[in-house]
Length: 378
Image (cartoon, rainbow, N blue to C red; front, side, top):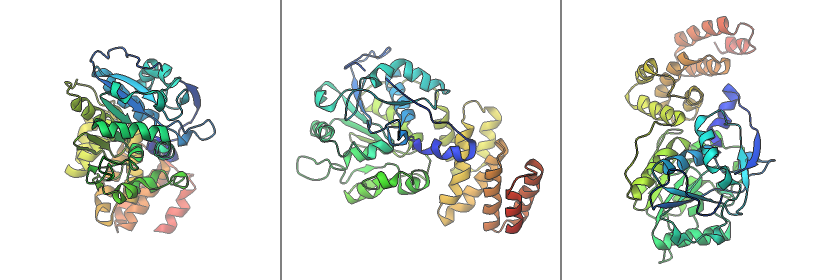
């Protein structure tokens, strides 16, 4: 949630992160290296973000993953934003290889994004809307953007919208005057995810996206919070959260009638897929996968899921999430994570298990201030 903002901003509470910014980045109708099919996609991103409020922009990681999947499947990609011209480009994830590769390919495009009024939608085969908190603010409100999206609806072209991206679609109508999203199976960032990871942004939003989609008559389908889900209904493709974006891009490739190239999953994507599998088939799946390979997974995302999933789960799901939290603890050491685990175990009546973790806590973090807090919890 990203941007997604969403998940990595929250992860900073546990593991620490930085948030530096720089402004860089298109030339209209630029053919990317490797884009050798005749298929063209225009990607829509928010231009709301600023140096003062970088968190209210598009999600760079979502954009990078979707762009690279399309590019590597031979699709020509342009980038558009409501204002056109340069958009904010964050550099706090420059240590990720795929972000570096994306910037090598697309910085010039981000430096000169296309304005909707200058785009002929008939030149494209699909439109792809990227999320991030900024998508909630300018995409549904900008008149030129909405006019272009209405033209895409009239053409019945493939439209993909990920995470907060479906906000761009909630005010669109079909030819008979009904809401475009009405009766369509689709998803977006959910209310639960919103309150868990974007609470500080909600005051800037004109609506909660899940609520608005349901209000407009959409059939809202989703996975548990943070876990991947892609919905396809005719020419509309939607994805729940950042971990679903690459798969939504692949679904777009298929919708364009192109053969899908094999690829290695992005580490955050692979991590959330693994957790989703472990959630359904047992926490042992985590141990089995990580015993073979840790390089393919992102320990930050693993820790983030473990830290938050229990607290935002429904009552009936809490025991399952607690088991996953205990298993995830094997793969890193953090006092706040252990503190939350101990409190969760006590809440579930597992006092012996909580005591065991507490004894380990006192050894690992002998001088930590939470020791007094935990002693009182027993």
